[in-house]
Image (tube, rainbow, N blue to C red; front, top):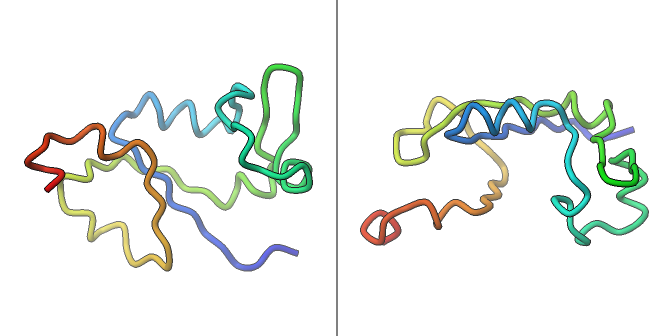
Length: 95
């Protein structure tokens, strides 16, 4: 039984959000960061692609969000993970 968890995934691109909502990714997108046990628990692994298992997928809600703008409406979080975010900002915005 999984602990009570909810995940909010954001991106500025609706196209990327639509792709992520499918829960299907190319194997290289997952990388080698997950142990084999976690892969078995969370993913259905095919030859070229991986699919997020339904019991995990239902925990995620996807929202369009520009992180330059206020994100107060997203709510409060216990932890925040950002991937490839700073590369999108100007030097002034980064500082």
